[in-house]
Image (cartoon, rainbow, N blue to C red; front, side, top):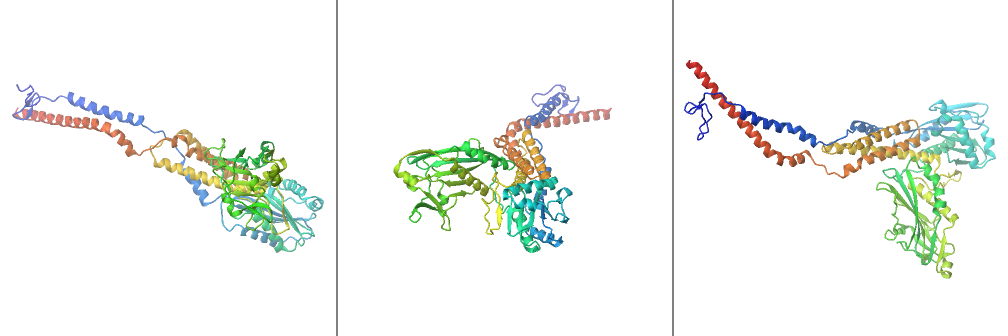
Length: 589
């Protein structure tokens, strides 16, 4: 029968094996079932991709690159106005004097570096009866308002600290619109030449002849350029604050040999009170916390020798790198310091009776005045010899006592000087020229020194923070399968906002606010880069992603695809036979 399927040959019903023709239309049930299975596999692909989708919060890569390129090509410079005020009726207004001082200032800006002052300069001759302005002030509010000729008589009967406060109040009144970014030098005539640099943003000098423009301009340029602009240092190197903006000051009292004597100290009662103003002054630069401890059995590593002439034990400067005993001095006990915080160690070393009194000999062969030294990027050490330690070691084998408060205050002052050195400033200003005098601040840092630190740290934080953001952006772009959580995107956006805010504060000359914003920008950038979700997951490429799923889906998908192709091919072959049969039938009829 022609309409039945021949099981031996596998031909369909309605197919004539002799004529290779089909007399009935082929059915679509097999084709429909095969294609349905293929379509179901294809419809499952979006669900598979959705189930394996990686959440990636968008990062403002374009804004990061734009701001970074701008800061790299044009380092931020802070607006500073320098004004020289001549309080004398004898000097004649002369524009050449203003130009000479401006030339001295330009000599200090040979290279454009981040943190420099974009300065303007003006000179004012305030004689009481008349007032003349030379140069250009950035605004009328920054221009010295005359009427200060009476300051000469008021200064004559006061000491330097009283004069400093008097000039500060006068400057605030007469340049109140921009007192925070105006640096002033008052010049007056007198018998004894002297230059006093105050603890605020001004100095005053007494010269014998105001008509000696070369000498006067050199002195004014030195004060403005060497000190107010550069802080009295050449390189401007400073200890980098922790990337999270935190600094831990760890103070330790080390008893070398408790069998000789044991000393304690009331650091919380005295030290933290003295260091409070320092912490407040450095708050825009770093969030400072203070810790203290007392350790025993902590001998030094370097050797000392007895000096018969001085009758003391001496340690040479070349041996100081080996003074710190990292094996016996267990100093790293800070609980508040995170992995990215900076810890500075300040150690008071009490020598044993076998090497007491102990002093440091300088390379010049003299005894150190402070009997202390610093270790860059680590901290500082001060040696404290107990009073009468040589005689006491022979009479009393064991002494238990506390460090006297007066001695602790002296040690804290030494540590503040060491902190200044670690931040790139001079511990104190000792000029070879005896006419110069510098007033110290109870905060440990004068206002003009803090301005320098704020400018330096603002630039460092901005460049470092944007470099971190760029690294994060490149990392995210290089790893398409990397998870970027919304918290990371938010931190990046806040970091950019803080960086732009610091940039605006720079343009307005608000040094402390710019330092605070830049510190926050860098801390947020570091938090985003070292987010736990980034550090805890191993990321793979797209090739690895396909290598995981292909062994499971490829065999099944391939068989389904081949079966569908075979069924479509068979259907169209049978349909062609049927159409041929119909055509021949129509022709024969």
